[in-house]
Every structure is written in structure tokens, then in C-alpha cells.
Image (cartoon, rainbow, N blue to C red; front, side, top):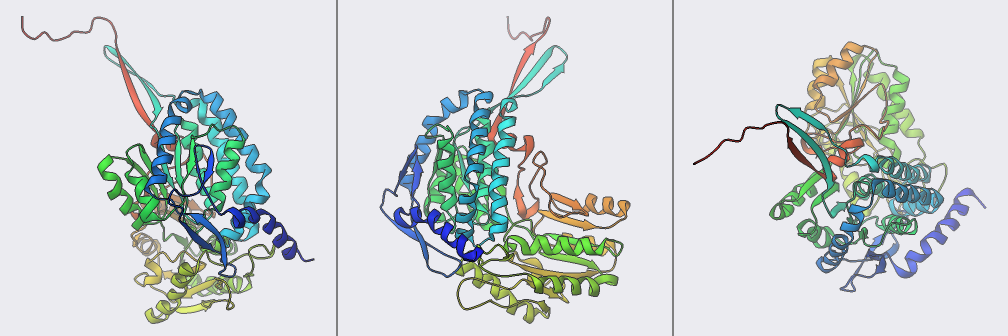
Length: 503
């Protein structure tokens, strides 16, 4: 039996429950169907067949979940940070124990390679551990002195939170939002993406098995126009955290306006890798290839544009093309696979459309540019060369294993090209000149920048974008700034003069 055959057999054992009972909602500790009884299908990106049926939640289900979260909020809020730390660390332990199950289910649900999904589960556990350890200090504030007064600030959890997560690496991204919400003392109503809802159900079950009280975390599946809209408008939900794309963020802001909800958006990107002629070329090539072709290119921080100084443009793009052509495209459970199938036929159709757009705009397809096979959503890693930044392939978020290479003359032109986009999530600079690196990072319109590195995540640092790439920051104390309200108490000292009005 091959490694793939063994993994397929394992996957079937983990998927059996979803095939039998479907993907149910989880409200107040109970697995339940949608109140309407309606379901929708999710398709396997491997072969396009029905993977499972999912509860199609709507406003009634969201209302039940929001009421459960509101009822559970006072007790969870009043639990000490030390007690919350214990529970959340237990959740992290439970995630590690079921890491294989999570990885196999997520690989089959999303099409992501198993070599990356195992790490995604462990990163989810790391998120819980990090914010668990910060729970005891979540309410900490400052002491601020002024003449005649002492001010003391503190933070309090804002209340029930709505969390809407995307279909790419949904398990890890769910923990990235939900762990700090729980650590702060908030309760949660989670709406997963309709394309990949399975591991959201696993995650809430894991949390409750580790001691999380019922009702603190609720999950409602459904479509954006049904469950999503109801969540954004529900009066019991005090804030909304979204990982998604800009159009969805815009709709959520409009829907949340009547109830004055706080919003936190991590949205799309068209992130540049800027490579100067003095860079370590081999490392820069490897980083650019890894950041666009791993995880199927379906991630917001992927390096979807590579800006290369013209003196090394031909050499650099030749190396990238060679590496792209050598990447194995295949079944997500094959240990040798790097690029698996894209999430859904709808998304595959979008990605494939850019191959014709590139030709129409005058770019060259130097690698890939084709669908692989007749079954499933497989696409070859693709490189566009001879591109200019005004082309659609350089401006629009393709969100697949597709890289656009653009030449530049000097740092001024590189900066102008890099900033010439509606997005501003991440940027990567490759140069041995520290002065040039600092000049670039001081002027780039990006929320996060890495110099001579791929995207290396450090949990205490802020994560987020500018322009159309988002609102707010995750990570470290920045997460608590969103999930909590800051309060101030002013104490008068000495004989504070109070103005007299009247007799």
C-alpha cells in the first residue's frame, strides 16, 4: 500500500461522521441542524464530488447562537484570567492530540497539501497557548499622573463577538481570531466559510471537551446573505472580526452600521517581493517561490508580485520558472504533493481566467498557465513575465499559485510600483544594503514588511494591513485592544478646587 493509499484510508475514517450526519451547527453545547432543516453541499476539490451536507443556518440560528453567547458572557467575563489561562492551555493540548485528524479533514476540505496542514493544526495550538498565557494580564492598564489627580485605566471584555473566517487554512485562522477573544473574556458566535466548514466543528468540540463552558463558543454555518448578514446585524453581537476579501468587508461595515458595531478586518493583498541586484539571489528565489506556491497560493500574505531590478531580471525569472516547473501538483494527501487542488470549481474558474487575461495584456506565460487533468481543481504553478504594473494580473488579487514578475530600474521606481495598488498588506525586500532597506520600509504602503526573509510569524508582533487590506491589528496586545473596552478612573488628590456656581 502506498503512502497516498494509507492516507486516503485514514481520511475516510475521519470523514465518516461528516458523511453520515453532515456538518451541524453547534449552539449552547449541542450539535443541531438548522432550524429550517435546510442544508447545502460542499464539494471535494479533489474530484468535485459531494463531500458532505452542511446545516444552512439563517437568522433564527444566529439569534439562538447570539442569545446563548450573551447568556454565557457574564460568567465567562467574571472568570479570572488565571482560570481562563488553564482552560485555553487545555484546549491547546487537545488540539495537539487531534492534530492528525484536523490535518486530514482540512486537507480534504480545502485541497491544501497535507505537508502544510499538519503544521496549520499545530500553529492553531500555538495561538491558544500564546493568548492563554496573556489572559491574566488582559485587563491590565496604566497609571497616569496629572496635577491634582491620578488616572487608572483598565480593560473589560466588550461582550459577544461575531467571527467570520475564510476558506483558506480555516482552522489556523479561526484560532487566530477566537483564541484572543476567549482570553479577553468575550464569548463567540463563529460563522465559517461555506466552502470549508468541517474543522470549525472539530475545533469547537475540542474546546468544550477541554473544559470550555457551553455557550461560550457557538458555530453557525450558512451563506453570507443568510447567516452572515444576520450575524453582522444582530444587536447582541458587539463587534465583528473578519478574515476575507474587501467586498465582504465593505458589506459588513454597511450591515453593522445601524448597531454601531466595532469591526476588525484582515482583507486581501497584492504583496510585492522587491529584489535588488545585490540580494542573495538564491535565497530570494526560494522565498518568492515558497510564498506564492505553498498553500496553493491561497493566502493573503502570498508574494503575488515579484519586482526585480532589471540587471538580474532574466536570471531571476529563469530560476523561478525552473523551480515552478519542478513543483509536484497532486492529491493533497500525497506526502510528495506541494500544490493540491484549488478550493472549489468557482475559484478554479476565476484563477484560470487570468491565463487568458495575461495573454491579452501582452504578458508572457513563462511557466504553468494550464489546468492539470480533467478531474478536480488542479492548476500548474504559473509565472507571468514581461509584465507591467498596470496589467490586471498585477493589480487584481488572483489568490492562486500565480506570480507576476515586473522589472524596475532603481529604488524610486521599485517603490512607485510597489505602492501602485489598492492593497497594502505585506511587502518583502531583498537587499544587502541596510540604508536602502530602511529607505524602502519607511515609504512602503504596507502594514507588515520583511527584509531578507519570507513571512516569518512572531505572535507578539502586530499583524494587519493598510488601504484596502484591512482595519486593525491582530497579535500581542493589539488583539486585546479590539476585543476589550478601555475604561478610566480619575482620583482627585489633595484639595481639588471645584468652581462654585450661584450662591
